[in-house]
Length: 343
Image (cartoon, rainbow, N blue to C red):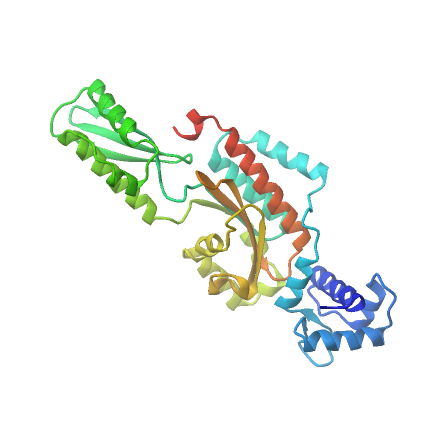
């Protein structure tokens, strides 16, 4: 437990380093600290902070930089009810109001806004159910012996699959088949469908098997669709100007590590989660901090809003932005009428 003086010195050091990315000298802390303290006292306190792992020094004679432990202490000291200014909130809402009423467009808008607010990379994932559940099955006659199977999930997504028909069917026939399957299996997931017996004709069973294939494939491709913005901002951070670090970021973006890692960090309940360095559940994200918040309906469909950047980030600004955007995305998801959300 840090005493009042040491707490104030560490907080001042962290805030200065976040602003400048330059090791902070004791003289600078003495000038900027909210409490009156001499440079000599600051040096003694910094030595204690270094011994206890809150700060590190690149060289013996250099100033101090926060360690992951120091950043964690700083984050825990922040006001959890931080919010963007009312003016900024209004500007953000206007940006969404000008966008089309489409979840994919909203994802892109949210990622763009959040990257601008944080000066880092933002990721927003599409709302997805814990496991795919059927909202509705549709069958559309395309040609005499070809139909389109449309499986609508309970979170604003759908999958299409072309069926080759062994016998000619009318659109009325196909609609009756779809209605029967919807009455029997609507709202169910893969396992529940398998466990629900039904008296089906061979054709109805064939459509059901194709539907099960779609469900299984969708569940296996569990990496959520997502929007990313601010890659340039992330790469321009001083920590990542080294060619090797930039290459590491590019490799993460080109693979599936990024979204897997961010989804691994997502909270089980409402609220913002901050993972700093080694706290990330994916080792490839250890050089970074990830600030993430869930939005939507956890038992039906939910996505995440996240910022990824160096450990040296403006946590107060990022946390308030992530929290506000996640709440806004959740409100927008609730307001989409069923006919727009699920069809």
